Length: 85
Image (spheres, rainbow, N blue to C red):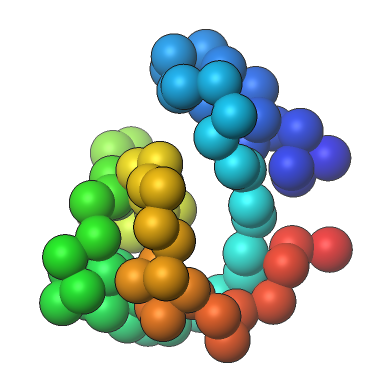
């Protein structure tokens, strides 16, 4: 279900055909922030999704990595994360 949601979000945002959609899990907010920081260090282009309303306003909720032909730098940042089940 999560993968389908990610795929639908990508389709509605005009993501290029052939783009991979992968949903990975982090244990908590701190781990998600570490992934964001690692992607930044590696120079990987991404979008940070931050909640704007409610009790979680201002919290990082998700990261969308821009499509890249060479995904080796992405793997360095996320290879230890499990797939969402």
